Amino acid sequence: MKISGVGLVMLAAICWGISGGIGDILMDKGWDPIVISFYRGAIAFICFIAWYLFRFKQNWIFSPRLYIWSLLAGVGVAGNFTFYFLSIQASSIAVAATLMYTAPVFVLLISFLLRIERSTWFKWGCISGVLMGIILLTGAYNSDTISVSFLGAAAGLAAGLSYALFIFGFKNASSIGKPQTSLTIAFFSFCLILFLFADNEETARVVTSSDIGWFLLLGIVGAGISFIFYVIGIRRTTPTTASMVAMVEPVTASLFGVLLLGDHLTTIQLLGMVLILVTVTVLSVKQSD
Image (cartoon, rainbow, N blue to C red; front, side, top):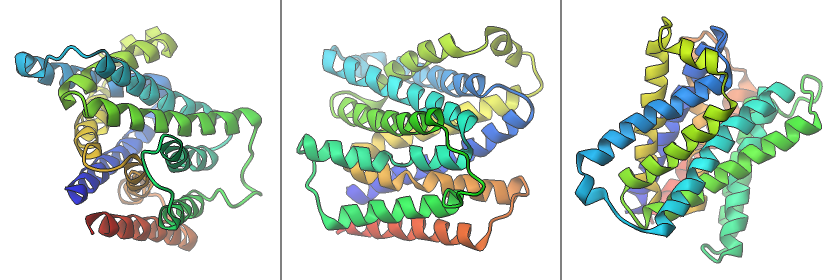
């Protein structure tokens, strides 16, 4: 049961990595990151609400706890996207990615405090391996090429905390109701929050632009399909395991850049990629045992 959960979370992370490449294409075309994030969630919300209404009677459930956890998950997703982009603007993508992927540490600490999981050397070793791989992959170890401001560091850590929030939000919501319900509520709150930050004129311009196909692909792959995999998968594994397995995302994004965008990876970046994949593989095998 657990290995299937790990597999679904991994598929979600792969979709997120692909969406990062699509987002990079759209940003190169001049679109605002917040507008891109808004459409990513809004298109997914349309998919989720259609899925929810298709079997309304089976999906309907009145549970205040379900609504609260789903809303918190939506706030977490919105915060994660927003703070991540703010961190990139204030520092660099390497710093932003490294700080956002400290999420497993926050998840593990919260899990210990709430007595959801037990602290083990194996879990701490896996977290250390993943974080080291992220640092090597993003180049955050090179202080000569990286500028870190207080705002950049604070926003990056806030992105990691938001990541942890949506993990716990979806984990608790999925244990109460069906995925259709929790995803619809979560992305409704997501759309409301990001709509307040998005440029209204640019948001309206997307609908008639020639890039609408990229936005549709981003929403379907980057949130629609991926979060279905994620919410079903997280029901079958622990929050800490889900947060670590999801670190496959930067690997997928890097490969997307190499294969489709003409990016190049150094030997150190390849080493970081291998370290992440090996750690996640070991963790997956351990979970299956």
